[in-house]
Image (cartoon, rainbow, N blue to C red):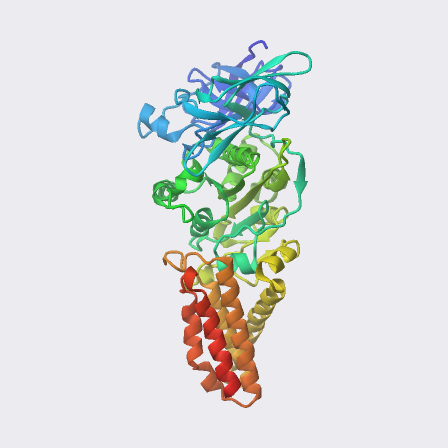
Length: 584
């Protein structure tokens, strides 16, 4: 294709307008100015192209040239992604630092994946086998935790005429495939994929299985399924980042993609310093051996922030297509929406609510709808999931913010963080009265199979106690607790036990930081059965004061610190209490 060259006529921050681009296409990547800054065409009017530039445009002026690459913004996919730290357009930050120092020079282009490193490719097929797109040609042990599956590229099918197990660089040919017309396609480990185009699959499946996180308030009360979507809105200081760190560390996913989208530099620095030090609790290996980080802080170019979440989800889809369960953490989509607002304003588009573009909801949907549980391409019908968990940081914690409201229209789990709970040192500060999960009914059979009981009914009983507590607190504030009946006062005590002994969880405690689902089941059963026994004792005439100060309450409070191998001790607490109540 002929080179398309235009000239800059206007520069407005990250937005550059160039004329002479009448043959250009939307979303093509261009090189802007004498420094060859990377940009993307986001609007075409006659022969003028509006370009969002992913680097600082200071010093760029009218008259400088703009050259189109004739292809959209792509990410490189292949061995070497795991353990890497990229910016919003997949430039490797560690390699950029070695090349340019602590400050990134403009116009520097470094391949995201190492072209020199050789990877041991183990072929899964033989010459003469027939393949179609998505079939696994072989594997590469990318890290000790991730077996990277090399898949037949999209649009490639036919007979394998050449393949062997050996050490290859990413650009060396690992296989040749001849189609029915006799055309031979050369397959390499390195693939490219446009970030704004979702990767194909055979079919989408309904959510069924819990994404276990080890966080009791999430797994029991507001669970998210594998392949689901969740949102964590909350004000500053309510614990969004800690919750996302906990999910990244403990979630039942083989691959984690963490997108730091517009967060403050010091918070992203904590992530970059902390993640390499974290140990994967299942294997004991460093967590980075199954993690990809995409970092685009608030002081980095605003346009790259807009691209960063699509870069992250494309990498996640790639590992999903191998049959892995992938968890995507986006922190935070509010900063991403602010980037959209700035670009939209410079394009002089008609603003929507609070200045955000009118297409904000559809842009958010483009991102969240790429989550899902799917049957991947290929003859083996493997399943893969991509779960998206996005933090939202509304100004002042205002949940009527357009970004929050647009997000709630497309996600099915809402974990509403509450600053009042955070100030009371209740973490995770997820408000159980405003949060919800729309996956409960879809996973009812899964929960019943795992627990051997009607788990949703037990969970709903605990929620009813908490909701009744909220009603009674209004009365207590008006006329005092002593005016309540013993029955209602016992409900308050049981609700306190649910809050403090079950929902409250210390992320920095070695034992309490993670609760297996089996442990959660035993803890909630203990608390609710103890509640029923206390209620029956009240009906038989027992004194409320004696029940409130009963020694079993202290045992229940300590039960959450039981080791996973000592969960029978929780059953023993309940059995001993039943015997005592039965004989009293």
